[in-house]
Image 1: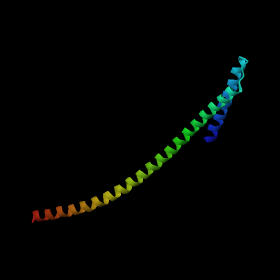
Image 2 (image 1 turned 90 degrees about the vertical axis):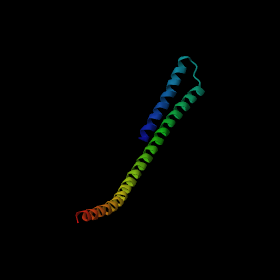
Image 3 (image 1 turned 30 degrees about the vertical axis):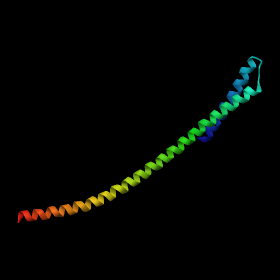
Image 4 (image 1 turned 120 degrees about the vertical axis):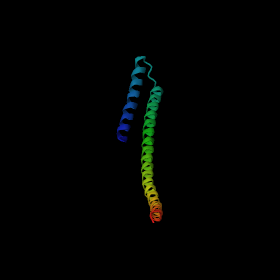
Length: 105
């Protein structure tokens, strides 16, 4: 994906330089500084877009990692709570059984 972005940035920069040259040559006023600054502007814009895309990819990777961590922790927490509840439920069932036995005597 990065190679495609770099290629598109190069094409964008080349197109801006050629467009600026052609446009200025229509008026017989070709200025190298204007062409250079058009080059610099489009190149920096392309690099900015690539940079934003890379940052978004890193954020998405961190988000997925955090999501996996939360899922693992949630499963672990669920199993621990279930084990504790089973202990309490067994204790409660034993107490209810004892009470029922006392009632039926």
